[in-house]
Image (cartoon, rainbow, N blue to C red; front, side):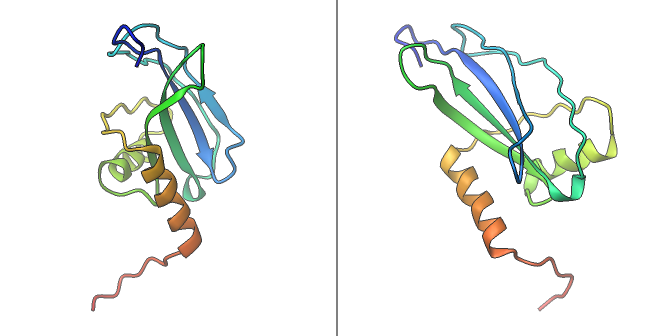
Length: 126
């Protein structure tokens, strides 16, 4: 947040596992309530990717600050998984949903653990 109590937010979107495809919105100057009404398109194998969406505060004088992050994909849970399922069910159509942002550390740790542990999915009940 700037000294005036506002922020200069923008969004970065990238695809895991390799982060090779990225998209950034424009910076919205001096606002706490930006509306990011922008579209992006990727050609991907849906079963193998995670979509990471991060919100940043642009700062001319120092490093940009991370505000928060979420991820969508087959390894997500709760609302993020539902959003991913809605996107897969409606290809080439906008699917907008609200999400509570998590800290960058939470998302990065969760994604690292999921890919490191490689926990198998099972239908067995114990």
